[in-house]
Length: 371
Image 1 (cartoon, rainbow, N blue to C red):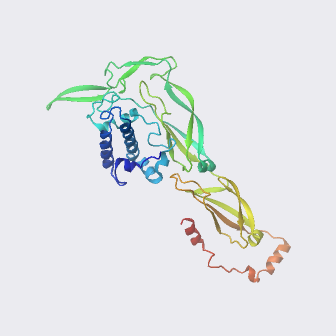
Image 2: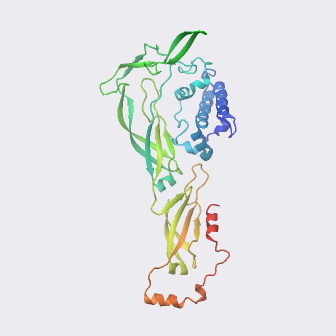
Image 3: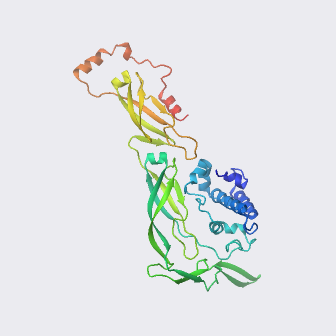
């Protein structure tokens, strides 16, 4: 089922301010909050849907990517949203402050404060992709070293905050007694501390392990784009949630093709006889080699457009083109016989330039490339 537009979900315009986005999300979140709709799967789904929309639109970088590429910028772990692995703990741990104290922390210990589930740290890797992999999409299996909870580690309730994750302090001031709440510095707000741990675990009960992670990379990604694989970062201690694996895309140079957005460029060199007589040439594309026809009398600088032979749009709007730039190769040295032939052709009218209206200037060709 196709995802709904994030702006439609929150019922806001694409020009909405950060304050308007937050207000719209809070309204939706309160309406479909699990405390108000117990055991209502439809309300829970809408609650998650609104949270995902807010997670993207409240982040300027992700919002810009969404405005440009749509949902495809975040598909298959594409660096935003909850990557298909959204759960209530993620939502409340990230956006719990938006709800205020109206729900009393009744769902999973979140909402109005109290114990929270700490999120593990994110991991970052770079993945190099060939132009062919970018054009067709690819699934990469990458070995990642991440921290996971060591087997045998047990936790107990923090005696300082009594499992609340916060400590309350009362201070006498000239205005009267002031009560403040702060994160417990003993358990870092988790409400738990280590009871027992194996010898190979660190102070948080975690140990490093190597894991093979499968990353589905959609076609059309660009150099520098960051994808996200939810839950494949470092584990958090206790009942925390795992961090994410952030995957930065690095595009490798191609031997013969150059990328410009969704279009590709190819320099085709033809000999002078081939330019005069016409020929066919085999050229590279991202889906294999193809043979193209070069008409007799082709002019150097001619651009042949192969439609749909470029890179797929990351937003799903078709494919770019392959632009073949014809370059007539002029020999630098000639034999005596060849020189005599061309000397005899100097005054031949067939060799005199006679540009036609269809022979566009360099600037017209450049204009056509971007039209």
